Amino acid sequence: MMIFLPPPTVSAKDAFELCISRIRNADLAERAGKAVADIVAADSAFRARVQAGQAQLVKTPTTVGPGKLTKDEMVAMYDDRMVDPDAPGRPVYQAIFDSAEWCPMCGHRDVVEVDHYLPKAHYIDLVTSPLNLVPACSVCNKRKKDRLATAQDEIFLHPYFEDIHADPWLAGSIPNEKRRAVVFSVQPCPSWSPSLLNRVRHQFKELGLAELFAAQAADELSGIADDMAFELNRGGPDAVKQVLARRAASYRSHRPNTWKAVAYASWARSDWFQAGGFL
Image (tube, rainbow, N blue to C red):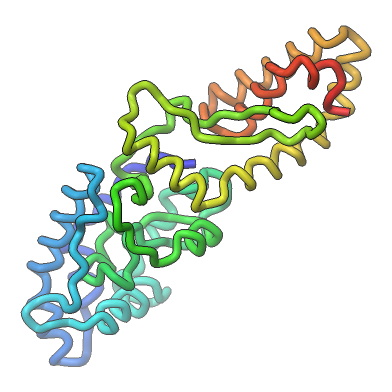
């Protein structure tokens, strides 16, 4: 979850001017050309707010530029002139799509589309801004929806500006020894502010990551049960613990907060599990 990505190198000005190139409608072309300054200003204000953790304060205009480009016109600017395979702005969209293999919001599923960090339905002056476009999986995109954040604690982390991948925030436990599933949660990190902790917990809940990770852990467990039984018969609970701890360390060295690292670490801490709870 929350994979950090380098921000796009294309500016909001260049992306928008690329999108409005080759517009045949003379009136639309003129009004779009006059909106460039407003697009640049909106992008600059957006960057400042996001870097300050205040994305909920970004303005939601009803029109854009002195020519008053409408919501429908701006959304069409994105859909028809950036997303479409033959659109003039497609290279910008494609570069963002190709910038990550895994969805940065869940860190688990494949990237299949580009999502607006702040929804295009409300932030119409940011619809073509590269900083407001992030690669995503379809599940996270749908769960995120077009919600307007009304408080700081409701803001999702921005993968271009907020990097928590090295902070040990994902925790796991086996509270009921009659069940084998790992229960995942977000734990506080000493360097985090209360607001950051609340934001991570909010995103974790909204994207249903506890359930997703638990299902994956249950499937993983069914696949290693025979191996663990062999280790138990060979060397007892200590042998099982050593294997589990070694796998946890290996996964954690690659991605500190992957569900696999946390699942194996949780199993390695459970005396009940090591004694045969996996059977």
